Length: 191
Image 1 (cartoon, one colour):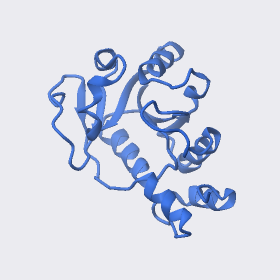
Image 2: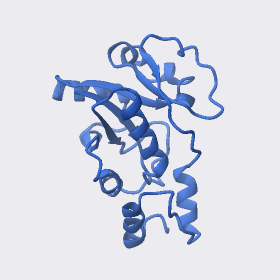
Image 3: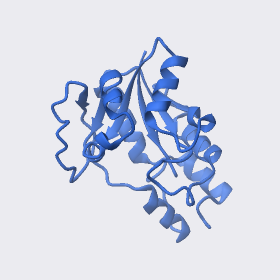
């Protein structure tokens, strides 16, 4: 199977994530997209992160009705901070018949060469890149293992959603309705 890996904190998963995942599975000739819920991103502070199990449950809720999407907690048991190359290597060892590709936003291309083992990721896995507004030229646009796919450019951020929740404002249409119900039930992000 051809699997696109969509890494993120998903704090919370929102409609923008789902639109990107659906677009890549449709336009990049994938069998599935796997959401990789990251317990700790090496480039982000973890203090405002909801517990990893809660974020995993939200992703499961958001994609439950789509057989082309899956979620994995593979990084939960790995050393922290987790690095993409380590996760890719682990998944390749665990699922040798799958062909994994890394999904990233165009805005991440410029800094991609600074990632741990970036050349190895490019050589062995390749990148599926979705468009982002105001993305800078990276020099990777013509790389043979970098494939761009079409997707709507929707500027939704989890930070904005968390602020709306703290301000007791509706996040309807920004998150899947089952995720919204879970956020309300568990009082997530209300601090």
